[in-house]
Image 1 (tube, rainbow, N blue to C red):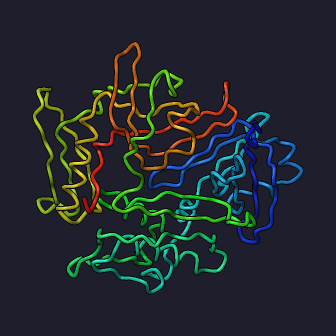
Image 2: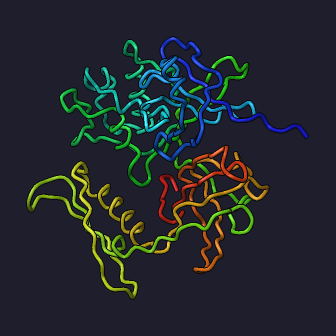
Image 3: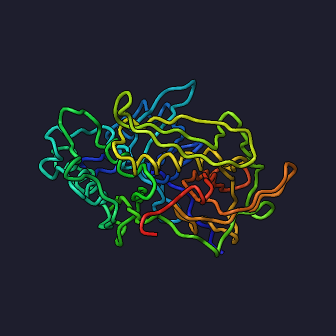
Length: 367
């Protein structure tokens, strides 16, 4: 059997497309995507390499990619390279991180807004189209043509992008995907069909990303290789959440989500000053209560590559049945994959640290 090709790290200039390195010597490499976020890459470079050729990882203008078995698994922008002892540590984030460094200088996304009953997916596409229409601002990112029934703006409360607000375009996207029953996204990077160029994509999901997977599972003694931490923090627990929104004094919006469950009443206050509608505020408060009411969560598992869940078989947003049995007890249930980090050189072979949240915490539009 032919051994799979090892991981290869490549960098190139984001504006010219000129390759800077096709085999960057990165150690302690970890990388991976996340749900409705950019994901990240971390690693260590040789100081001599940076001293002799600093352009191979010039922060803010260098793309970095990880290829495994001939396929690009991750891509993004280098944001930070710094000396630490005898090492240079490198940090990168995928494509949506770029929008945190961009602003709407023209207002209304260059005339694409304002928005009334606008599909959030279309607003996200408009934001990317505007950002990439400005000279020296085109990453070559494409955004899926997905449509949704999740809307922003009403005739009474039009959704504006005002130039004087100085809110980053990335923060605008975060607002559009941060509520329950709103679109989701993740950053995807692949070779094109001819393997001559890189395809950079924002994958939009509606009513969700991922699916309930009955063909794979994460299980102790099978593919979970480290004892996961089970979080039982009373400081974070609450079965009563009081949420506040826009407004001042007695006019301030308020919603309360509360249940009685045989436990001592614990309350938590959550402030959402940007929320100006009671329906949206109610959704956020109910989600917050469901999150805080979940004791004994497993937030991540470390996996090895096995037929039970081969690496590459799960996607961001998938629900995977998780079975954990060890000295502190048992945990079984559907967990949602919200991201992961691949460590290709971990002791004992390639590992994945997968971030999880209870699937019951999520509700989806259109369902």
